[in-house]
Image (cartoon, rainbow, N blue to C red; front, side, top):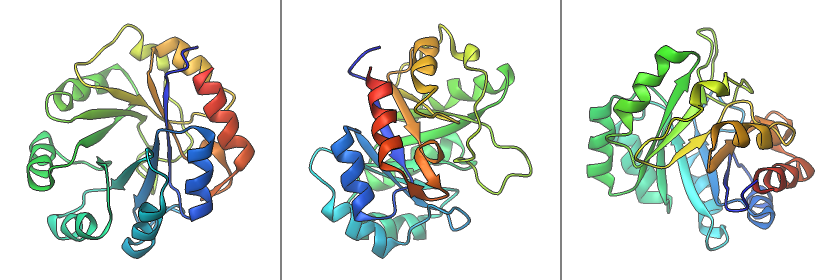
Length: 214
């Protein structure tokens, strides 16, 4: 397993969690701005977490169909390295967000079957990175963080011109297999390292990073 695999741990809510993921060797930390999520934070909380984050840890804001008013406030108040669009944003919206805020944009794309792969080809032409996630069920309240996997065989041999990240139901126990099967250089986890919804578990966080990086 390559030791250069980059890990993103998403849904951090406390300074202790930010310090934990940095110490474990994660490359990215994610702050979730979606009120229905147990991992959601407000702008003031995120600002404090981002300001105190250790140097070298990339700070990513996860938003869902956010309008310019919210993104204006977010980028004005919270020092960020990347915006993650996790809703139904169109390729045109991705381009508009990139142009308006001057930050790299990661677009999440839900995958359940082979038909969903076409969207990856559309978004990799406009986004700086792609997050390949499990498509949520139609009845799900959350666009991600549902602890669901998808058939990783769909990604075997597929490559895109921009960096991509694998997400969806990853845990310390399956992440090495997922990387081996898909060739992912980057992986993302939220619920898979939690002891309860929204509560990161130190042993699971370290175990995930160790397994991902081999």
